[in-house]
Image (cartoon, rainbow, N blue to C red; front, side, top):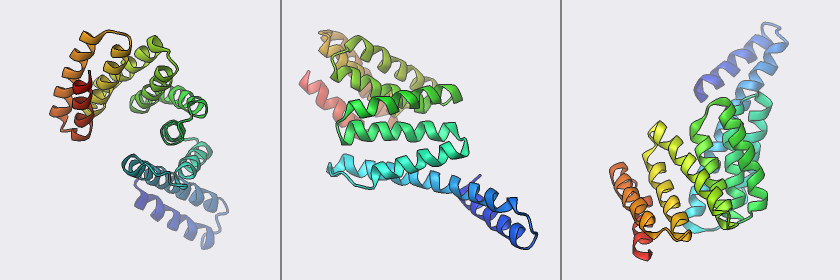
Length: 213
């Protein structure tokens, strides 16, 4: 149901409570609005994070938005939504705060829930960022396995910009492992994939990595 549909449903439930004397209608209406609030908090948090990636200044609202979304999705029993919100909590700690110790538990829980509800996109994001944590800690084999699985999931759902980003990630791991020829091949594939997907933002990073290799 759309946000507009949920708000209209809450209005009708209000009338049902006030004019129809239905005591249960209030709680039902609150659930509709909780779902709208959760979706809005998650969407706003993502935009705040996108701004951070541009200006590298932490916005004090970001973590609270994702935590509120996770809380509401949990209350609603929406495990898919909770998995996504948990990913963003982990992403915040890892990317904004550079705190993998805080990030990894949220990312692992996000992955478990995403797998359980059949959400390959969120699972791919959680695996990608768990791979980053492994790579930073020097666990390169684990980093490779997780990034490769994330890439497989993204290929299956046709998420080409994400595939290109992951191929870049695999290339950096291969380079750290001393497999420079494989890294070059991965970067060439990443370049062509990003070009086909018109993912110009990712393409800039790929071409910089090719120049640095």
